[in-house]
Length: 565
Image (cartoon, rainbow, N blue to C red; front, top):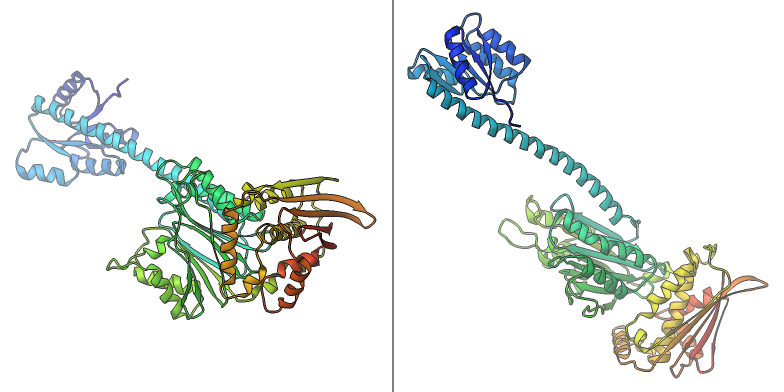
């Protein structure tokens, strides 16, 4: 049903008032009457009409004063008012508009003109009403959207920072281009003490970009917390994003692990412009360039998951940042670039992260960043692994509520070994067996070390003495990757058994492999002699300190360890 249009006729001459009312009623509108300006104001105080015909000269209160008071009553609401006057000169017309009238009609009233002006004002009034209604809806939508965005930001910040810890030697800075950042800088510590870092940069900005990063964050924290290798994280995150994200959406990412014990940085880089190790003087020592497409683009079978490792020999900073930082422009359109990062670190003065932050903000000259900015800095010290050994945590184990007596035998063939899938499967079994806390860390360390020894020295026949040579670590792991790719008939078998004796509960761990074995006593003697000056061998020594017993059998391709719960 159409809304009734009401017109207030304020006219002191009754015949004129009634004649105009008759025309208005014939047009299908409702008419209200006022004999002077005061009555017109009182009527508007009770209820505002849709339009007012106001005579300028009336007793009690003239049209000018009545219009002024009615305008005060209306506030922001627009009410069309047409002045009626016997004067038809231009000066009278202009003065009417100056005091608040929207139009002017000379007396005697031309009824045809009156009808035309009413129709015009009715159209304008309806348009104004729609605009006001739309404006109110937009304002309500704005307030609802603002509340929802604040709630979403609170939830997203909670998810992204759910694993937040005060990790030593790690600092980060982020500055979003909008309320939501499409960048995520996540850090976590693995059960064996490795630092895990992920910088993820989703396409676009705002809430949609932030949501695209959530699956990556969730998988990263879950897998880092359980000690999965970096390459397994990359494969799993890519598979999830490839399945969830629409075409054209992807997440550039750098996945990093820092092994303090080995002094090794491992990086998978898919689309991040800056991942580098810089010495204390700001000199570039190592750069990990993007070698792969961002996460979510390739399918599971096409995805490239190999990583690049580097063993640092001097103190410095591991720096990772998104393209929002390297592509930040100054007033001349010049980008900050990786060169700007190196200059900032070379200048020094404050902390490395603060030096870079201040430098990029100064480069932008106070302008807002057009893309999300993320920066992470990890301080690396040569020979820092000694202070981070897990042996210090060996006391006060937590039982964690494992299953009762059990035995698990896992057989890994050439395909699983070649795809480097064994450790992720081992971690999954340890989780299912209920290990928690320190026990999980220690059992994982023992199993990983024994398994890798069987694979590297037994199956692949690699010699640890290679690591003593210049660039030996890089050559060792290159040979390891090449050897894994060529496997066809090899296998490694792992058996875990929970047992009870007079001393209490224990886990018996046995590892067998298809290799020719190796001279374990000679290896251990050499590692013992090199412990003071070499990083490798510390894992074996730590396994010996954690195990109640450890013995190699036969030619060295079978080892049995006993771990007291």
